[in-house]
Image (cartoon, rainbow over all chains, first blue to last red; front, side, top):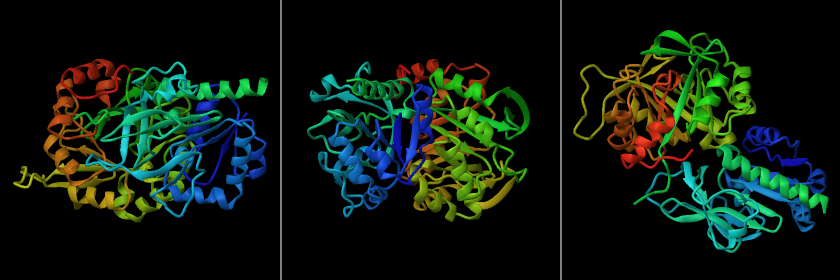
Length: 206
Length: 265
């Protein structure tokens, strides 16, 4: 059972649909108790970074922290990944989880922003053994749509270039994040979601 | 320099009464199949995105067919846009709930442009596409400034608005639209090529992606619209439904012409 965290921003249908396709049950909640007790957590996200403020006020933020500390697998998608960093200049007063160093910033490029469409990912040295990217070749195409990007710091497993190089995937023990949308990235995206589910299942079996 | 991002090929399903149809210059509809089947077929044969437009929802003054959207979305794992008859935040929310990733608004946004901001604030700009059906003004040529005088039409090309297409695209961006879907009514269904000057005029005027639509017939047309038309994505319907073009083959041609595309896909 995958627990999808609802913080009333954007829509969760696409992510649920992908898990359903993989034959994995999912539930949607904004209740800190259920987040604390989840077998695996997914935080999808689109839109403005300030919407994550709701996670702090509702108590979900503390519940997520506790769950991560206990080893619960946690996947953040798009803004959900950005939230794993210290913060974002999109909403400087909103604190992220701070699991990865640095803040997300708007693209500093003359190219069109948002960065919308299919682009390629490449593993970092650190990401060579990435669990999330198992079976996903370098240079695979995935679907992005975002205006802010996370810095390339410790814990970044794959990067993408769009005028500059930014974090496409993060991974550290039980914490995973993707700036792109695996649920919209065809077979490769589904493979990553399956890798996450498999990791969660193995962990439960231990 | 390579930006990394690829040019997108979008397969469009024009739907009415739950069936995919194809018209020429917005009229004379013929049946082209089941939306869910066709969407899946296009996605697995290399389309980067699927757009489903309920082309008679606005003119029939009825909501879009939610069950068709849900059924089409179920096994679709590429971006999925739905449009036609979206008038309110509630309409949009119902479509997202049914599995749409983006909604496309046309008539309602011209009539009440606040809807763009409302939906963008709730679901993010990336989820809001403004569809513009534009027809060149009689005898209109490219001006010295590189703009093309073209008028925006509503309700599937039935109603003239007096609005200039380039100016409206700019306003839509300022109000929070994440992409512009520009259809040339002059070229639509002709298979004689996209309106590259008009597409380029809009693409230069905004800083959000522009999807060119109307007129796709050959691979060369796609090369033109990505180069001369400065389009970020190109959309076509009939040439894919009737198997004239295999999307992969089309993309291989684009790649040979030096245009970055998602391949293999």
